[in-house]
Each structure stands twice: as structure tokens, then as C-alpha cells.
Length: 82
Image 1: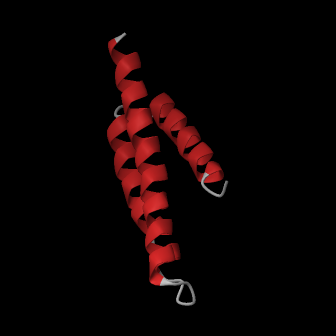
Image 2 (image 1 turned 120 degrees about the horizontal axis):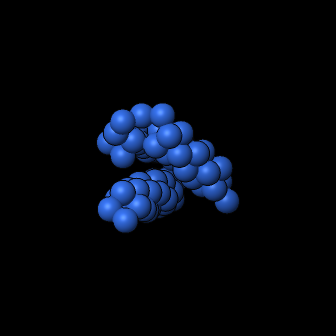
């Protein structure tokens, strides 16, 4: 559930980029990748949590962020060619 709010914000950011910029897909991809990497700092710096848990939590961040990037890029490309 903690991934839901960032995913909604990412979708809103993509919508705004698509509305107000010339190349929203590229800008969103770079922005999302940078923020995705920064999001790994949380799970990886929790010293009291076992390493295995931190790695799985980091993987979940990658899957959630990667899924959003893939889906929005695919959607934007599909709508641009239609």
C-alpha cells in the first residue's frame, strides 16, 4: 500500500509533463529513474533490519517503479501512434 501514493503521484507527473512539455516520455523516464534510485536509499539504510529483508524491499521498489515506467511509456507510445 505504501507504493500506491508514489505511483499515483508519478502518474500525475506524467500527465502534467504530457500536457506541458514537448518530450514527456523522455523527461518522465529520466525523472522516474532518478527518483527510483533515490527510493532505494530507504530500504538499504535500515540497519536494524536483516539484509535479506532490505534486499527484498529494495527489489519491490524496483518492480513498482519499473512497472510504472514501462506501463506509462507503453501507453504514451500506443496513444501517440493511434
